[in-house]
Length: 245
Image (tube, rainbow, N blue to C red; front, side):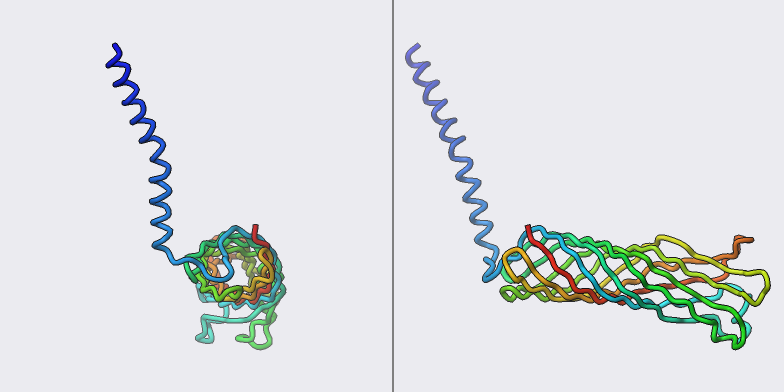
């Protein structure tokens, strides 16, 4: 009986010793893993953040005629025009840092006032016109930067989405014909920028984004036949401020 009790105590002691040693073994593994990654030098960008941005955007609309309704009679089937306006929105994301390399993800939503109506110059003297209006767009992007202490240049890219209303109007017809494409469309984006940390929490940024949104198609209200394909993209310049948590 005494021998059994002693054996049990020894077994329990061994189990307790093993259990107590596991956290230290785990810590040692983590420490070894951390030792393999280069330690950041200077300012550390790791952490979540949120902020606001303001800017200016230029849109480019390419209209392609899908039938022989109007300007294809002149052997031209495309019409292009520019639009522009102010931007403003919010963003949020998270950064990780390994050595000088900073990588992360970011989401943003931007209200826009990018719109333009132009006459169809391909048919001089006509009362035809094209218009486009972009009232908001957003992106979900990856970011990759190189930390130079508090200065962080970066490149970025990902998916985009936005609400666009493009239209054709023919006031010469006497019928008020117009073909409208009013859609929320997806697309992609790519860009670059730089960020500077004023304090441990606050930073300023400047960035450029090119946003290419999916084509949308417009048809007359009295039929299902698509008359025009509208291809829209945006060049956006933005300044912003972010707070790191």
